Image (cartoon, rainbow, N blue to C red):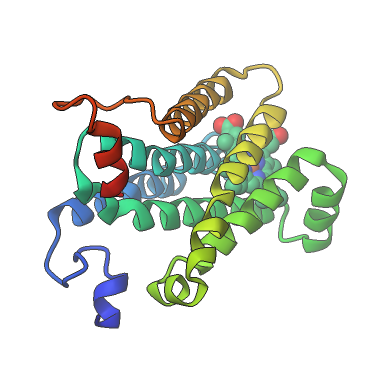
Amino acid sequence: MHYRTLISPWTDRSGRFSLLKTGIFVLVCIPALLIAIAFWRHALGPLPYKEALHQVGDWTVRFLIATLALTPLQRILMWPKLALIRRMLGVTTFAYAAAHFSLNIVNQNFDFVFVASEIVKRIYLTIGFTALIGLSLLAATSTDWALRKLGRNWKRLHMIVYGIAVLALLHYFMQSKIDVSQATMWSGFFILLMIYRIALKFRFALTPSPGTESRPASIRSAC
Ligand code: HEM
């Protein structure tokens, strides 16, 4: 397979133009663009970097949950093409998390010593930073080359995404102070996704099925 076809956000695995991938690529860029525009128009309030940090953090969690929701959605909608965008959504989550971290550095006037000491001192930052390291590991191993090199271990490694989600949600809760409604909502989605996964593991037929008995087995073989 040609290298260029693997990294392009607008082609499928055969190198053909994919409307689905292109559409999702445009969609995932929109929040970043809107935040950047709001920043340039001085529409982010008196603490623009902090506001941008918050908004980018929110989007990181949304993309993380969307990435985790892809496989269940793929099964429920019986739409295997959704697999095409899994890698893109994962890398997007990492990109937003990295931007969130960078904005924290900018917000602290590039005082790297202070940033590092805060990560050590404040548990919610230690947790966020651990999640970021985890996402970096997943992004670094999201290439076809890494997939081939790691073989069976690739899947095992990428299971840490669930731990990362727990850490990210904890970080969300801990910094929320009074209003925990958003953190609670996204944790609710995460718990639902986990229930779905556990149910699948124990072979409950959760997918609308034309042939009831054979359904779970056929779903499993389709992955
Ligand atoms: C996967 C990693 C991470 C995710 C998903 C994440 C997500 C979030 C979210 C959702 C918020 C709340 C935004 C809001 O209230 O609207 C937040 C706040 C924040 N995050 Fe993160 N974060 C991550 C990593 C980090 C890291 C590595 C740092 C810095 C070391 C960091 C520093 C902060 C700070 C300083 C706040 C604001 C706290 C405050 O206003 O008091 N985050 N993060």
